[in-house]
Length: 236
Image (cartoon, rainbow, N blue to C red; front, top):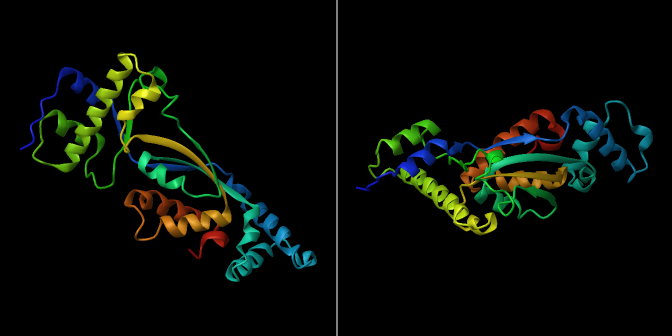
């Protein structure tokens, strides 16, 4: 049996720390989809000097044709920007994509003991933790610790917050104290790429062999984009 004896400080931190699920926010104005498709068609028809064939509804068919022939460089003329709220492990995988721009929440400069962060850390709850935030906190607080891996994970997050805040109180800077922070720490990352690169990202990150937490985010994002920009993404 794993023994857990919470101190008063740990119990206080447990009740104020946050466990959340990952999510995303599309930053690009998707009311402009028709305009984006027309822009792609206009650029693509330059190759054939067939601008005279442009009509109010010719873009979808033209773009579908060039994608089916593998001429995906043409769709690089338009882009998509998404804010992803994920854990650090997932963000480490995202930044491996080359043809993207990234702006990420910095643990060097963000001091999570300050009021603007609620004086607390936020952790992304993995999909294999079968509890809600409050259920997990209650199980830890009530000493339900019968070798249950999700509870052990929650305890590890709580301890990381205890040590992080303690190091700050002892005089370490955020960039020093962050060395005790785990992969499950929540981070926000704005990711911008052209349509062609997003197609490659989705092919890799929604595949059956992709990390479960990556698929948890990318599968619903792709589903939404298939609905809103079907010509670009509906064949993936």
